[in-house]
Image (cartoon, rainbow, N blue to C red; front, side, top):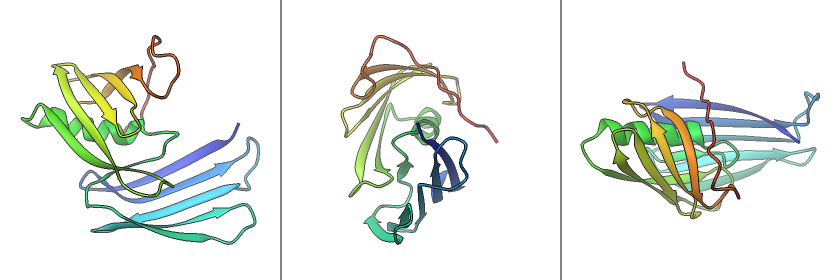
Length: 161
């Protein structure tokens, strides 16, 4: 099992800079480091794996896109859910980018009631998300997609600053 350390810098609620450092348990030597900066129209980054040379990448991405690591998307999903809950619309569609993928994808959110939201993405992952009145995630029920056991509810914990 590998450990992943994430650092997200946010500007006006959107990711402006991202770092992920992957290490084996008990080690301080990274097996992979990904660092990316989000500009007005793109995400530019470098990936360094092991002793190999760093590889640069660039992906067209609109400002305000939801940028997530596939192993830990919930803190960034929560920001989008909070925007939906704060708004007057019953739904929100956003551009989403999974770190390391070839391009942008979509994320669709729909209010199910005062305390729940349906989250669906281009990967066909679907969740019912229990939220508080500001949109903070309280719990998640997988409906379809990635995790394989949709009958069990997840507990999600996120860092608050």
